Length: 445
Image 1: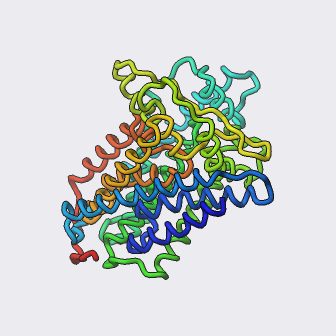
Image 2: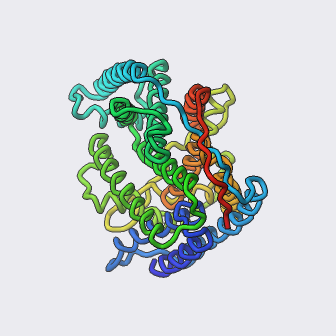
Image 3: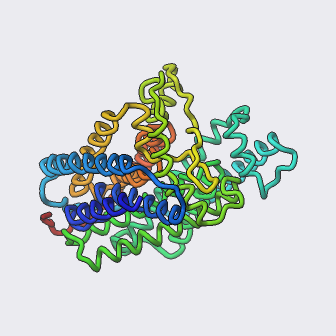
């Protein structure tokens, strides 16, 4: 395990240096993801016989090296598309009027009320002991065991809209902070209404049984604020002071997410009586050990092509009437020592079981190549909210690689498609009254 941590540390340093000290660039980020999970795993297995094979360590590092190589090729190609200069335009959305925002806030609160009533109804169908304090726990049980008889599709779609509007209003607030309120045109009351809309949208999202929505939301907010600020500024390279400042903000974002993740885990019954360090290990560091165990016992099966990886996409095909196998909802649990077990394996296990050893390298090379292109297209479209949302989904999937497969499995899903469509419609609607703030051209090294 120590050998893996040392190799990942050196690879992360190289990734930062080669990416102009940008810790949020795809190559450094995927290295940071595996380094963090490996450090957490190491801190939990010190003094125990639990360890991983050197072969697994080499496998992880070699896959990241393949990602890096393809990322560099993608970056070179992205430069030919986007050029070596940033666009001198930043899209500024015009804010909805206070009256419209207030009416919409009332609508959101009403949807929240309907969502709570629907949640308590589902919880009562599982247990007569359900009430408002434990309804999320019973909702999760109904979702896991497939006992939800039917979903209110109208409420589901409207809830999706409200959740996406939280992204939209969050971007408006970020825009005011980064670009300046005088350019956007706003008031203190307007900002307060927007923050309440965001809060209500997050509460509606929390009514679901999962918690990944919060990580996706934090990722979007961080990416939008981070790259909108870079797009506006004249920086072409982050200095050490700036780098440490960004890392500090990343740490704060991680702490906030972990606190919310733990709280929602208690509400849904996922966390149980686990301590914070046990939960941190179970949802991150354990993935490295589980990957090693899964590689040891791997046997080819007769699964449908990409059944785990393309779970979300196959669900979309089934919804369109095209029948394909889509049965792997949860991965099997494996022992990770100390009497603990987990079903989180990093993204590499999913690719390995779906496509074999060669397939892992092919998938990671493709992800690295397109991530390199997307990263350099920030120079051209980094001031556009739609592109920043799409890019945040990409970064979310890459950041989660050290824990599990989220990039292909969930991004190519019905819910994400609906998110993108609704957000794009909102941006296009207010884009009719968009202003463009001009800044100087910034050449990139």
